[in-house]
Image (tube, rainbow, N blue to C red):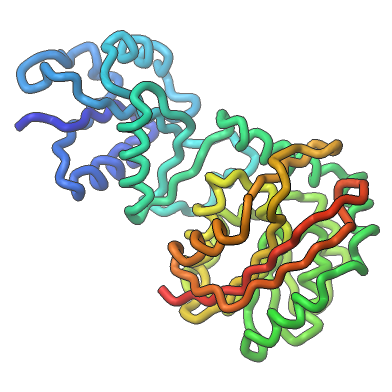
Length: 346
């Protein structure tokens, strides 16, 4: 039988190659998996492989022989390379956590991008979680933002400035949508002031943030029924369907758009049926990095996010639109803050 794809893989990420093989096979493609160690023994142009078959390259970040293997494959000039890697040394990736077998980590696409995007689209529509690696420029900007919030001086001054300036009206409305004693995740909690406000209303709060300094501050000022952890919201470690609510205020404005869908997939996984999610985004600003080095993504209008929420299994029940002249960027500027209150329906 003629192959539709050939997967070359490093032994360190054999499970990833099996996952990709399963996805493509379930989509009725014929696939061959070949270890890099066996590359020299494989005649890619022999028999049924005479046509130029798309190649998927799956590597670990520090796999042995990767450079040699890539040089050999790049000479073949096949339709495209989908270059996949495990993020093994990234500060935001906790290797001790148990990741689903249906998790792939990719960093770049080379060659025939139309075909590559089709494959990524197929993966996206499957049950896989797909994470971008730091080679992507916008992902780099995102990681630089985390470094800013991990600076002790910045995080402490940020807490001092905003600890008593909270969107209490939005927090109050969010509270009315939840049952008494609800378990809430504050995703991107920063120094924890929103978590404490919600806890004071009788809820149980788990706050997570990628900034260790912010979490230290949050723990110092924590009140009963709050817990804080250094954790990636994209891979929260929470049990499926375990939460009544998710609050994420002005955290995902630092996400490149490519990560927003992935975040909503994770939120949908951990939120219980009919659970409530509230996310606050800045709408209409240009994509930029501020003087501190924090990245801010651009969303031209609220409809973009509304449609994405719908696609990810949420029903928008209210949109709160507010224009302010206060900024965390050290200056006065007009910002259109939009909070989306949504219910998980699928």
